[in-house]
Image 1 (cartoon, rainbow, N blue to C red):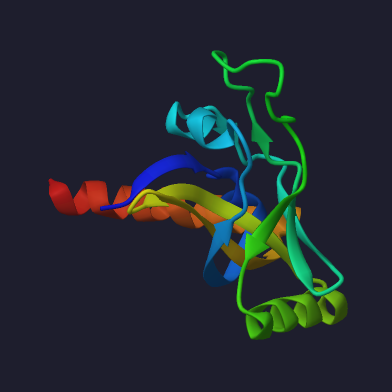
Image 2: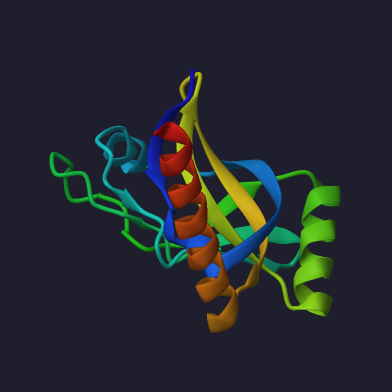
Amino acid sequence: MNKDIAVNRRAYHDYLIEDKYEAGIALVGTEIKSLRMGKCSLKEAYVSFVRGEAILKEMNISQYEYGSYNNHEEKRERKLLLHKSEIRKLANKCKLQGYTVIPLKLYFVSGKVKVEIALAKGKSLYDKREASKKNTIDKMIKQAMKY
């Protein structure tokens, strides 16, 4: 059973999600203890590709409150653990076609922290309006079917 730590709900509003991938994440020190307490934010996080590696940037893991002087940095860059072929595929799409890679959620799988990342394309204001219209129409239809 997966236990969600943090979910980026805003991503579905701001981006069109194309593909999803599961990646491991390299953590140090007291980061895992903070994650077990649920002290994490994915709102402004994104993935960049440097020297053949996938790096998760701007993810905030709050400092462990019971930690000592060697607590971790809150917004440090964290390496994602993916296969080389997946990294190459994602990096090429990001370079050429205007896609971006964003984290959707952070969760535990049998004691290990995993990140669900997505290949996404930004929505324009028009697309956001169309999506909200569609959602309200669907809600009205469901409500009418209920009665």
